Structure formats: C-alpha cells, structure tokens
Amino acid sequence: MSWICPICERELKKPNQIHYCIKVSVDDLLKDQSEELVLAFDKLLAEIADWDGVTVSCSKNCIVFVHNQTFFLIRPMKGLLDLKFYSPKLLEDSIVTKSTFYSKKYENHIRLTSLDKLTPRVYALIKESYNLL
View 1 (cartoon, rainbow, N blue to C red):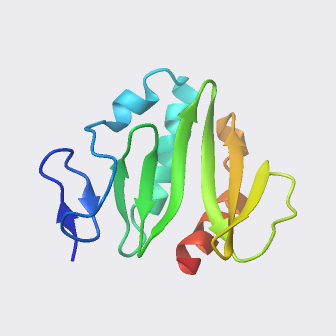
View 2: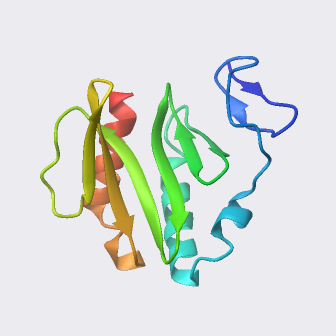
C-alpha cells in the first residue's frame, strides 16, 4: 500500500515517510534538455513504468523509480541524463561510467548523451536492478 504526500504529491511506500518534500514536475527537470534526450527519457519511462509495481515520482533534481525500493534514478544534467541503478556485483562494462559499493550493493551510473546510447543492454541492467530490489 502506498501513500501520496499531500504537499509534493509524491507516491511513497508508507504514510509520513521521510522524503525531500518539494513539488517538481518531469517537465521542470527536463526543460533544458535537448529534444533527443527528452525522447530518450520518454522511451525509458514508457518501458519501465509498465513493469509490475513500479511507481515514478520527481525529487528535487531527479526522477525516481521505485519497486520495493528505489531501483533506478534519472538525473538530468547539462547535455546528458545520468542513469543510476544497482547491481549485486561490480560491473565491468564499458557503458558504466562509475560504480561505487554502498550498502551491500553497487551503485552504477551510465551517462546517456544521445538516443542511440539507449541500447538493450541498458534496459537489461535496469531490469537487473529492479529484480535486485
């Protein structure tokens, strides 16, 4: 059962869950991105939002995807989308720009700079994070 914060309208796991309470829209976060990166975001959203039990909300500077826990974040940055997801082991993959061990799992980042970088491998890594958490 989820709870929607009456102030920021984020869907959260439990009532009065601690969160950064600020009302931000996806359009606000993507306003300075190229049309190509907005399309890449739309493709990611269309795929992932259909997975069982996924909720999507916006925080101060990122779009948060939650299943049982947060399993994926998209942080719009100047000229790119930083995709953050989790894995049980260190990923030695050329598309992963950063991996950090944190709380018994790896936090991984992919810097998406164009639509053609959104490959089946990217979706597979995000799906692994979804299944992990």
